[in-house]
Image (cartoon, rainbow, N blue to C red; front, side, top):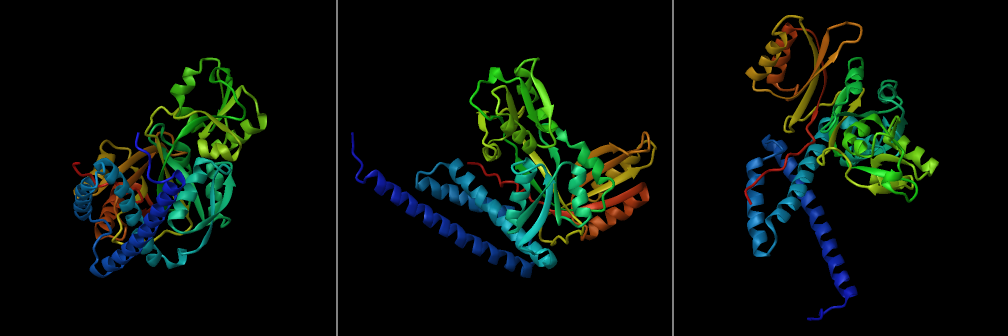
Amino acid sequence: MTKPTLSLDEIRVGVSNIDQQILSLLADRRKLSLEVAKSKIQTQKPVRDVEREQALLEKLVADGRTHELDPQYVTKIFHTIVEDSVLYQQAFLQRLANPDNDQPLARVSFLGGKGSYSNLAARNFFARKHTKPAEIQCQSFKEVLEMVETGNADYGVLPIENTSSGSINDVYDQLQHTRLSIVGEITLPIEHCLLTAVDTEIDKIEVLYSHPQPHQQCSEFVRSLGTDIKQEYCSSTAEAMKVVAEMASPTVAAIGNASSGELYGLKSLKFGIANQQENHTRFIVVARKPVDVNGLIPAKTTFIMSTGQTAGSLVECLLVLRNHGINMTKLESRPVLGNPWEEMFYVDVEGNMRSDTMKLVMEELIKLTRYIKVLGTYPIENVTPTEIDV
């Protein structure tokens, strides 16, 4: 057996030195990406150049092979680097477009306490904006909106849809009546775990605490626990974790995030208990004033509309989008409270209200609908990885 030429401590020092070099190089790359954004302002080129990204990845994969690096490994690393570069440039352009919103501290309302998924989404979103959130914990989605509407919070963070359980109807219903504007979005991977306060076994669990959404997203696992399991619903996953921590019983558990559970002294009894392993929740960020989205940034617009009660009225509206080449990413219908059999349609499209095309689309939709309201135009934060054949 060949002995290493260096001691373990010497090897670790060498690895740490390389890690520091990598961090320094990543910082240098970020500075250059900012210069790219400044250049694109002059040339009016969009932030994303997919052809350039594709050529870059192909060259990096080829160069990586000369260093005996796996193509998937190289691709995964640079997908992350490219995503950071795109979001960094977008944030810079948005600060220029909205100088009044550029602040180091912002009051942010969200559902639940520390460690709730809404709390994690808020921290992730504002970390990208280099803004520290002053966190305001709320017990309901309505309270999240009211805190912003009354000026007690600058922003509110709300979950809007999940890849497993679908749309979060309570939030859609609240948006019918708010005066706030959607100013951002973020998609967060949801990693549900079974959390307990003491060492125990799964077959000893009798009561399961969580918000209704995680209960629904983990329904297959819950069913596997048997028909005698009791499900208790809490206002948030944070409240569920707090309850289980206080009870400190081997027969109770919570569904929540593993790292958040550690904040409450909980242990993960089982990981990955969601029905779908690819489980993501999309969150929206609301504020009292809309944001101006730089035309170089890919944008999304959300609006609500009520169509006539005649056959084909919705189809006519959707044809307006198709005829103008506007891609619709979401269509959700919800009943109008107090008006039986009448529905309000929530629509997400890829488009910027600053553009002539979207202005023309709205003019045509106004003629076809009984009611229409733009809830907001905001940057698309989900950077789709550029695919290459490796």
